[in-house]
Amino acid sequence: MAKYLRILFLLITTVGTTTIMAQNQQTSKDSVVQLYGVVMTADSLRAVPSASIIVVDRGRGTITNNDGVFSIAVLKGDKITFSSIGFKDKTIEIPANLKENQYSVIQLLINDTAYLPATILRPRPSREQFERDFVNTPVADDAYEIARQNTDEAKRRILIASLPADGREAVNYQMRQQANKYYYAGQLPPMNILNPLAWADFIKSWKRGDYKKKKS
Image (cartoon, rainbow, N blue to C red; front, top):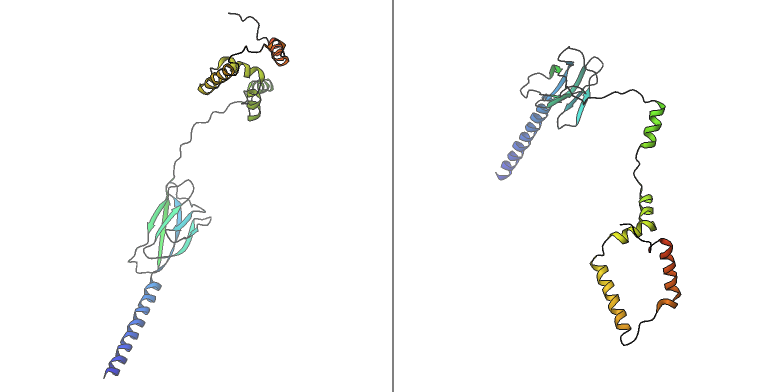
């Protein structure tokens, strides 16, 4: 008895599975719709060539021909987007309860107006005006020129004379003064009048004009 029940259960399961697969195949086959139609402008009813027809979330699509006509296979319930340069996008949905396997549409696209900024047209400059503007146009210094100016001796002297010493420089100067004071403690410091290095520094300072009287 148990053997016959097991065989009956297997038969019922096999028949049920076959029926479900057949129904799914029939449903999948019936859900395919041939969408066709024409894309035109809403204001003048002219054909829109090369308009894009995209099936949303399907990764498929097509374009219209020179007469705005298109044809594509879709599924019931799919959303279709019509787009073209210069027109606003339009999205439609294929009815899920469509009884037939064909669906035609005449899609009208509305012009998408884009406002551009005003453009000022001026006459071509003369040769004299071009030469004048070309010569007087300021050119920003490049990295090489900036580095050359920063290492210029005259500019460094100006910076040394004008910029105040920061905390680190002031501390270093004070420590050097204290070191010299402690080094010559208990004796007279040497005279630099016979020091050739001191004379060389004096001559360079004199040539630079460091000892000239500054005008007030």
